[in-house]
Length: 123
Image 1: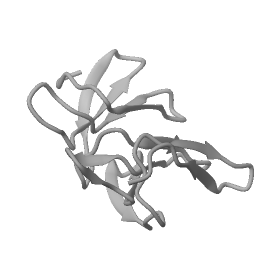
Image 2: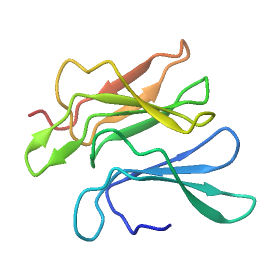
Image 3: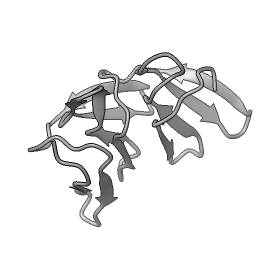
Image 4: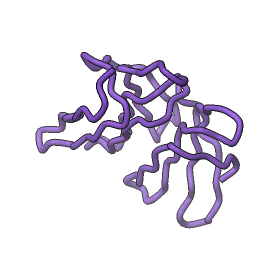
């Protein structure tokens, strides 16, 4: 990776590449996202996440997009926002909010394509 990070998400995409997004670098939160090409072994930057965040959840959707939701913006600002990453256009888009903030949630993709996001910490 180009940026060392922690508390990020790592998602295997349908094309075999790996998306690493957000988290915390050595000095601050980061909104950068990188793709690892599993064929060439090369990391490249892809579109930035709209909100810097860590401690959030990422789910690969049936259409190949990645949903990220919740997490922590700064020390005590918890998020209910969600974003979608499109690997075709390599862009992030804001999508609907959850009803409450969630930090370090768990999520499951259901057979009907919906995503259940479970609360671990409520703020």
